[in-house]
Amino acid sequence: MAHVLAASGGTRRGGPPELVHRRGVVGQEGLAENAGQQEGETVSRQAELIAEVPKNRTEVIRVQRTTFRRMPLVDARVWTVPAVPGDEGKPTKKGLTLRPETWAELVEIIRRETGGSED
Image (cartoon, rainbow, N blue to C red; front, top):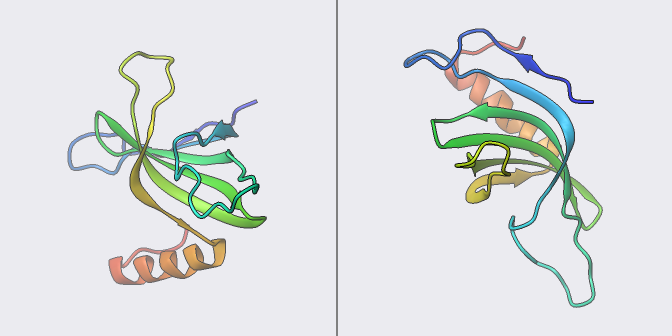
């Protein structure tokens, strides 16, 4: 069952993007294919979708929990919006995959520098 939350503000020009949270499992095919993989080693291609934020009409930013070599990671990546509704979008090379504690530090710096506050 998917949980959906939308923040106010919509996607109007100049306004904040609509934030949609969905919890589920999505495939990671095509994302960093075999990056750093040793011969005979398997890499998990499953990730838990945490949130999806529209970037523009053709792209969204997906935030996902994933693992690599048993290390928990959080991936924020730009995905294309599928041309045909119902099809799966494709991940791009634009994004960051970091340990959760590194994300926490980065988010704190961004909040401080942008004058944002924690909700």
